[in-house]
Length: 328
Ligand SMILES: [Ca+2]
Image (tube, rainbow, N blue to C red; front, side, top):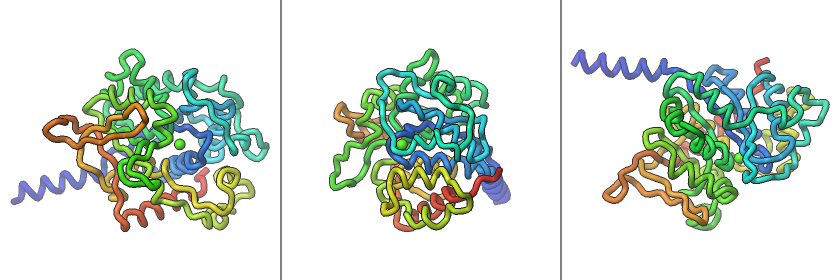
């Protein structure tokens, strides 16, 4: 009995004092604005000591991506956070309604052009190499160009196996959503080959947790928060980006934010998890999940689930982390 109690205590203490997650945020910050809110959350969580933010990599092509990310990082007091951009010519090019904020004098920063930024895969490899084994959680919330090119880089699979603890990815659909049970989700269909490389070649023993379209769809960011809670400074980059993208009358779903919240707080029951199995990315971009069973031996993949209680808790947590003022 005593032994069992001490084992329980040991387990409790090790989870309470577990190393805080070291995170890399991989984003396609161009078209949608949830990336901007998700990056704000990464900073808030780092400010609270809940995680260590190692760097940001960008998976789509637009001349202002790195400049905007540097502006947001500077706004949040991390002007020197490393930034990498994809140099893959097959990565999707995307125009943006809000990246032009990078050129505004209201958001000073020093990285002005993608030419000054690092190559995303080189940066990913460097950041991973420097970290202790099995310590890095990668949060990937866009097309999978950088993840696929990391996998395909020399020794990439071995490096992931050695250093990465978790891939928390916003991609696919695993339930009835958007009026169909066969939703083809944007992060997949805007680069099917990249997502197939990840699903086919990511190492079996490094877990992937997928946040499907249905999770973010059920987490509409309350527009009133943008109006009401971000006036603590005359110019707020998250507020202005949100309004440029979604306008004042829209509750934008929190797709990308869900993957941040899960990665940093996997044990806090903001979400449930499916049984383990394997996601296959079909040629049309559908993500087919097969649970472990007679025909499927893999246990690498799970997808997020969410009860109504978890939905309310997750949305409140996302909202509070998005509006938290910078600590600087
Ligand atoms: Ca995104």
